[in-house]
Image (tube, rainbow, N blue to C red; front, side, top):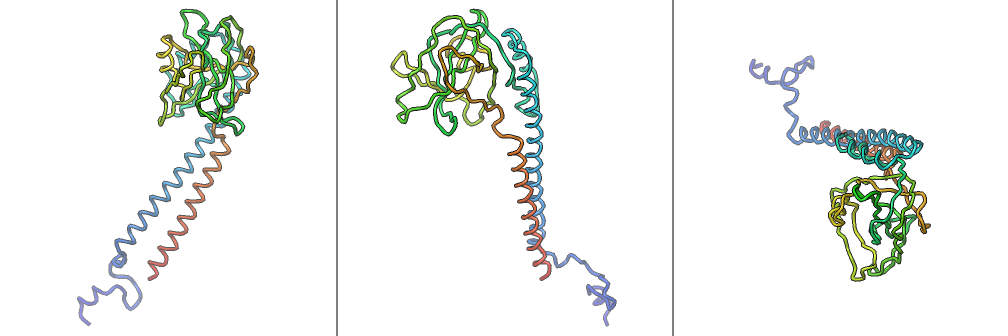
Length: 275
């Protein structure tokens, strides 16, 4: 037998591999392995991210409960908290919010305009959240006070008939909240009807834009008082849109998808390599 032919053969008489064992592996098979590893890693990473969000939501829920049990803050204390929160940086956006603190103020309506936040849902019903701006002192920033939820008419041209609170001083006690900025839509988009006494409808709580429209500074928290004079409207309270249990459920879905995908690709790879 020729010596050169012996060096080219892949198997000897004893069954020992003497050539390149990967010479039969094609480009398509290599791409299959790479795609499998990339997609599997991405699915696992998404599952781990959901678990981290679930852990944070559990901590955030505990923080909200602690804040609700604390003594109500004065308006000066809240102003100081807002200024300190502006200097904080956090990996989780909710961590810098002041949602859940209790606040007590002695204030009066700054004007007779009722503000309606559009596209709100409460117990399956579409409507608005009604607000009115209150003044503590002429020199301090005003504060947006929630009056409650009001259902919407099927005809969007017809707004709810709400009477603004008369300009008088009230003692308001409740909790404050801040909403995260929606990167897709965060503009105020105010809609004022021809009727001067009609409420002003807007699309997003944009404190800076609202302050510019009112030509007066506004504190960056919204007060949801427990005692709204002359009003008995429901007040939705959803500080955590997605609970920790939902994040855990999403994580289980991602991990299941990763396992199914890995099993499917392994079966395809086994059939190809077997050929």
